[in-house]
Length: 225
Image (cartoon, rainbow, N blue to C red; front, side, top):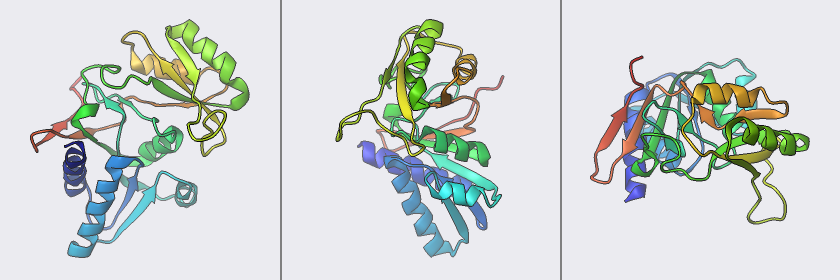
């Protein structure tokens, strides 16, 4: 059920936002697999000329060449009513935010399980924060002091020790206790010495596609301020 929902959302996003002669940023995660499948399908069927930029090591090579991304498509761990996202469950938050920030349009695809009216309703693992390794203890304390909750070092599952990102940093998972002004929180956390990036994507996504259990696709745009 969830896999079909992911596919529905991914296909809708690719069909509505990708055109010929575009540079497309593609994220990581299980939902993106379906977006890549659909991109490949359309390239074959429609003979589209598309350059794909993944949120991985190749990003440095592509973005250092001053390529402008026409659209970026990525998943999310949770999406709230304002289109604020939590991302970084897989540990690639910094690269994913760089790619989203470089794109003219940033579109999110997800299944119905990621849809929330407020952050924390569905995703219970907290907000990821990438930190310089030597700073993880003071950063963890500062976040808890400023905003409550607790920020714990993410430990690896299949090896001993903490998770190490592609940037050779650590990840704190901040389990917050209450609703926040996410724009202010994101800015404040990024000002703490040693913080590289947060998994809060505030005011970045311009549309989200949710694959639903009944086979439909729900579209969400940011609320009009």
